[in-house]
Image 1 (cartoon, rainbow, N blue to C red):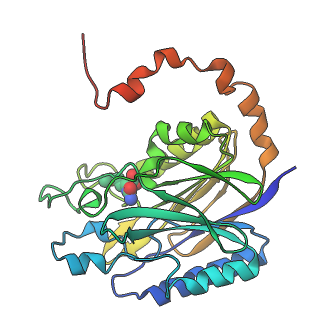
Image 2: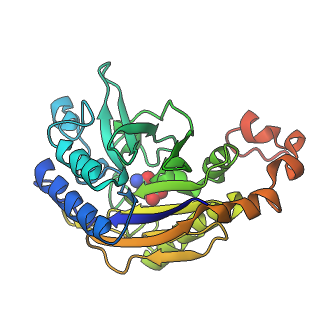
Length: 308
Ligand code: CDT
């Protein structure tokens, strides 16, 4: 029987002027609160160390690189790893990664309960655009600052559980969960930064955006018989609102815990990973029921083609 208390460390806003040290101190406070409540695996948001900088158009390479980490752990984040190790809590968080070759990725890492990095994921579905768009109410320049991830969707057995990572916009794509589901995933962790309003459609408000987030996370969990944890960075960053709505979802698609604020807030749920087995061996027993002979379009074709 594999059971784990899983936590989501939703983070409130991080302003441009906030140092990594200030942010890491907040992450450690959440970690300590989580450990005190029995959390054994804690999930932080996407790009957890900085403000959501893709909202700004930048050309200066040095200005861009200031948001990126050249190594992980590094001087600023080492205290977080150290505290997680001391408390025996596995963690995952997102950050902007600058590789030694000068490549930039939107990345998340996974540690074991001894504070060692056991997994790395680089965001595959990058939303937004690469050039300044005057038609939008706010910019979303992820395609400018990041390359699509090159590591695929992988899983790792960590603390006895098959874990996989995805980042923000990945949660809207069924392919994400299915690639992980085909590897037997039991816990999918997904940090996000989602603006509270749609920069291209003013009628789309917070309620619809929260619904779409829930819908995606709950469907991904149910259709792959896995726990899913979605964790926001929320609140008003440098005048720009990000939505909250962090949730923990069980393998039936039910929400076990939900954040109520747009601030630093802990959610948690005791997860019994044996509960993943029922769906994986019945309605979503992939080996018995999938019909791959009819799925070739999924990988052969990217955009929609209307052929009638
Ligand atoms: N960070 C991130 O991927 N955010 C996107 C915003 C989509 S609107 C360009 C999301 O899917 O939540």
